[in-house]
Length: 94
Image (tube, rainbow, N blue to C red):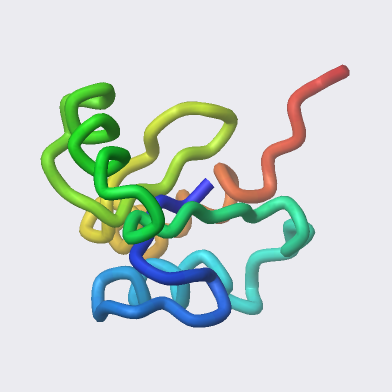
């Protein structure tokens, strides 16, 4: 789940666009249908509630399996290190 400004297909600010580009990198083979997003501009109470909930002070944010991965800088670093692929493509045992 991406908490961004705009949508996955049309992010409306630079950091949201950057994080979307990273998670949509064609080298990642997860199903794109599995990637959801929430537009932080839809509800102005969500951003402060999200920041308070996770105690993380920046948006956009990426969550995988209901856990915070991080904001743009963390996601970019994981991507550059090759670690984001594992997180995005991981399938928990049933």
